[in-house]
Image (cartoon, rainbow, N blue to C red; front, top):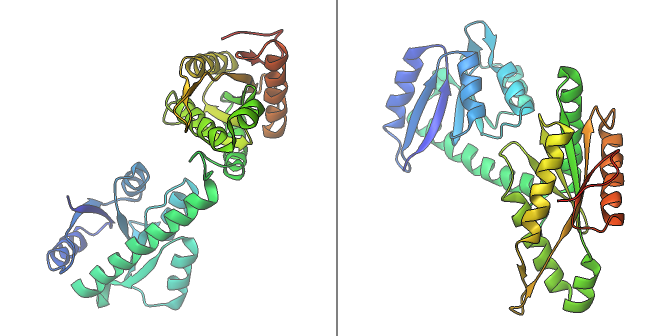
Length: 304
């Protein structure tokens, strides 16, 4: 199935010209989608589904550079090739600084140059995606790593405060994990961590963010979620872990439980740092209460 390329340009003639050039490509065939305005282009770019984007400098009075910066700031990693009628080096530099991967002058555009630019942007985009994943994900579990989770937590806490929206954080800790390593070995411990990550991740919404916080501890960020709803989610995950024994490398099955602490912003904490502390304190309350349960910060205890 041909990969889809998005063209954002307020000139429909440019769309027809680009479509014609696509038909002359030698190596790979692409399907061209079109957006005529800044707003439509940004929405389609953020929706995903496109292998790359061709973006015009001028969009009916709006600036294509501004669109790149906004898309990148909102998490878009689709490779963007900047199109302009200008040949100024300042535009070239500004486009690259904003986040574009290549720069083409419309008057010099031909099928060979466009195809070469697309191949370059797609290859570089794949490389950058791999590097980004290495920098933001935990090797063992495939979950977000601590650094990336801290960044997301700070951003979501600021957004929740700015718009007066709820935000919940759940901290999980595998019960008696040290015994797994001591009795079954570290390969078994690794298997338990991977299975726990898969079990927790299978129960989440698309917008939720799960990370390996460190060692056998996991953190779950629940946007637009009240503390009580966060507790319900944590209880559901605790129950899911209890009901799914982990298969170890030697073929044996191991029952696994997890304890959880829940805190909400602004109910239990005023900012991201103290939200983590509140959820962590609730986690230790769950441990003291007998493990295999979820506890909401500030409550006397709870079960799953």
